[in-house]
Length: 85
Length: 210
Image (cartoon, rainbow over all chains, first blue to last red; front, side, top):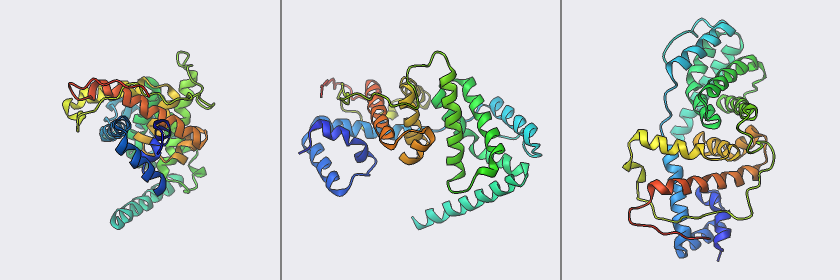
């Protein structure tokens, strides 16, 4: 059986589902027998889920406007000034 | 799955068309590309630099450099991945220039420690994010990311927020694949630790040391 330290070292592979079948089975066995590592795995998985679910904020209007003006100036884009973000 | 692949293939072809038009001097095509990605590049820049003005500088420099170097874009990678590479370079330069942020050299090996530190182990609610408004949640998550050292923060932002592959992240940061993996693990575990304070199930106060 994997030790807790070995489990943590392989946690990324487990979370990203990149572990090969043999390693995956060893990781599964470890979490099913070690409550602490199960909690670490579960809460890290939830950590990634909340970050992935976070909606990207809109770009501030003034930041968008300055960018489009700069682009228009630099590359003489006819459609580059103003417009919504 | 096949339908998804087809949709993304059509989108890639459409995008390559825009890039080709922009390369031949069509400003409107380039503006379309800017509008398509400005929000993501701004978010990336803000997440790495943690600074409004720096993020805006990075945003502007990224698109100006992209325009200037469009002839160099070979189409071997996605246009967005190419843009990200430029944006990461610009953001890292900003961090290096900022006097107050000299904590970790970004392109040198980082001591990730012999031990992977886990201090607090507490069960979270099933959907812990539901206890907070979108605004509160956003603040909690941003504060946690901001507290990471830049070298860890950048890897986390690229891998877990922008969803770049390990290889793309290594290329964008000019570090090795093992370095990406080790920094990512540290970043994820540190964030988990910080968020536990907010997300742990009420009544559970279990501390453990591994």
